[in-house]
Image 1 (tube, rainbow, N blue to C red):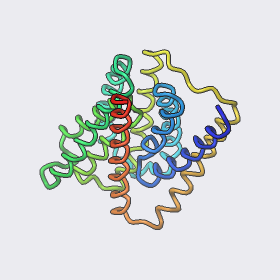
Image 2 (image 1 turned 30 degrees about the vertical axis):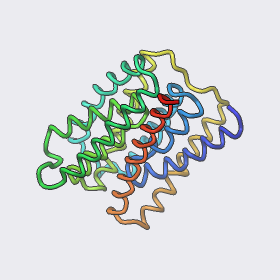
Image 3 (image 1 turned 135 degrees about the horizontal axis):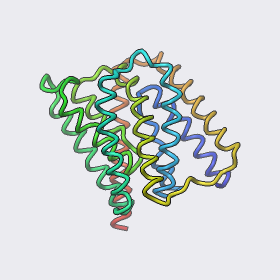
Amino acid sequence: MSLTLGALVVLVTVVGATAQRMAGLGFALLVSPLMTLMLGAHSGVLLVNVLSIVSSGLIIPRVWRQVNWSLFRWLGACAVVGAVLGAWLAQLLSPDVMGVAVGAIVLAALGLSALLRGDRFTIEARGPRVAAGFLSGLTNSLAGVGGPAVSAYAVLTRWPQLSFTATMQPYFVLTGAAALSSKLALSAAEFPSAAWWFWLLLLAAILIGIAAGERLLRLVTPTQVRRFVVILACAGALASLVRGLVGLLG
């Protein structure tokens, strides 16, 4: 790994961890495009999975009391099923087809959640939980981004932002671990090679990002954070769709 590439990976890791602490998600959305572009689809997504697990794991102690464990169990169980299926599909589909599929599914989910907002769906409804968890696990395995699907669920059910942010941390640890173990078991993808000190540098970058996110949380309202979540989700899905289309048509 070159010095320039390593510096870019560290920088985007700081930004991703900052977004993760503020909004409950965003790490994979911001980091995955760069990782897959420079390290390849499979190795890049593997690295994103590992860093996402570390980032969310470090945030969990700070938000433990706000976690909705009932929703975590529902979403997590369905996401594991989706993650295993996604890991299997990733061996059959090209990265470009995967990108188009993930982007289109997530954008459709976000659009549908905006159209259906109202009193019809709440976080107590089981159907949306199952669909959101499954889609999140599936897209996490296919492209390293599971956040947009659960973002659409949060918008659809008006899930309070504080509880959403907290619950997403153990959720992303679980789904990241499921996606990572499934890929390692089903494929020959390998982590990018780097010196031991570079991994320590990435850990420091995550800690810096978390600290920055906590400071920024004092300056914004929950409504502003929720808008940030939706923007991140749309941007991540659109980027995945465009990258896939460029690859297929190029």
